[in-house]
Image (cartoon, rainbow, N blue to C red; front, side, top):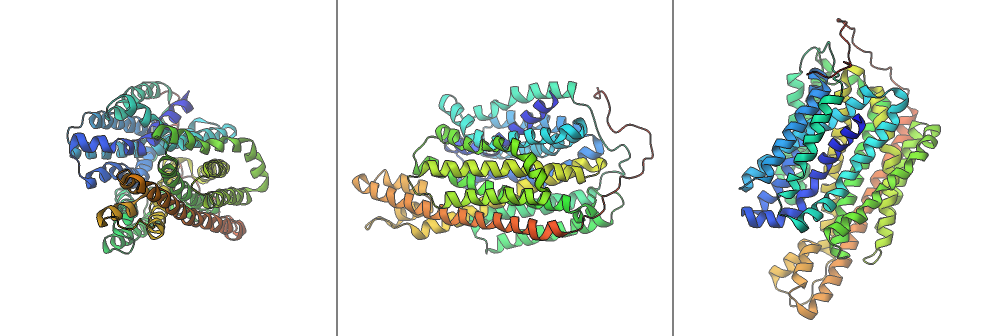
Length: 506
């Protein structure tokens, strides 16, 4: 029952990351929103979520993981209600930011609670289920959004959260036991501020890069500032008396190595989902719901369940390298597909899901095993931070490669007005919109745009394959040869209070 509640919480958070993208045309009309405001309706959620997740994990260790989960669910519910009732673009952006804060409180709490509720022999299976449910959120977003938008107004995509979260809140308050570090030295305010600012600047820079350019002063400033702040965070945590996260964990291969693997895999996954969603809707002409149903091919990750025991026999590093190799193979399959090769695309997406299924539960479990009990919230936040940063970087980097290659490859018909040609080069969706007004000449532009898109898709997924293969080599050659560092000891207990209360606080 607890695992079902945690899974539903995670699913709601995942659904709302992209579900609004389908409603943007209606939102723009109803709220008279600018293009910049529409972009912030998406980015506000990602930015607050990614920037606060490490801080939220530390809050759970200090004040209680169940309490932090309930706070996050309450905030998410209130922000969803506000988003559904928004009468201005500014109000909707603020509510989306509130949903991001709520998601940041929810996500690390779910994983930390799993570590405390489930015994060691059941923890791996619970984490596999948690990972599978987490992977469902992105492809289900377009499906749920498509169904709702076909029948109701755009606010329905937020109203749907209200009854679901209300049920989760009541059940979680009754069933989930509290767990926290009873001898916590206090909230690490400086470390929390540095982590929020560092991750916030880094993710904001990655989000802004495709629009302003990777070499733009604004992008470089944000990325450099984020890196400097995160270095300052690591330095502070290494010297603080009561750190939010013990930095000696980073010297433990079983902690830092799997975190890097999660970063690589979510980089590839984020970029691939971004590409294939457009391929299915524009190149293949499927509606949002039809495209979303095809995206469920990624659920081939459930086929990895019986194979995980095999990878365990290979050892942690060989098993992770195998999963990364499968991810690289998936990218190679997609990279050779043409405009008419939908089946090949779905096979590649299924292979990607298989690779994710092999590695994400194993990586997550390794990180939790290496994390001391008193810092399980912060350890869980490392998993979430790596996933958020990897996804944002994947969409930004792969999206930039796709856009640049597409624009360079597109041959527009002669005589096309400059404004229309610019719109066509901007995106494959723009090209299809222009083609709809060209009559007989539109078919040639559609064919050219589809071919240019598949050229860009090939270049982008080859980049993803290279990143995955580099990760596999690093795991095999670098991490597998390192002598494991000694485990980080638990702090000495100064009180007899139990770490896990048998009954929830009332």
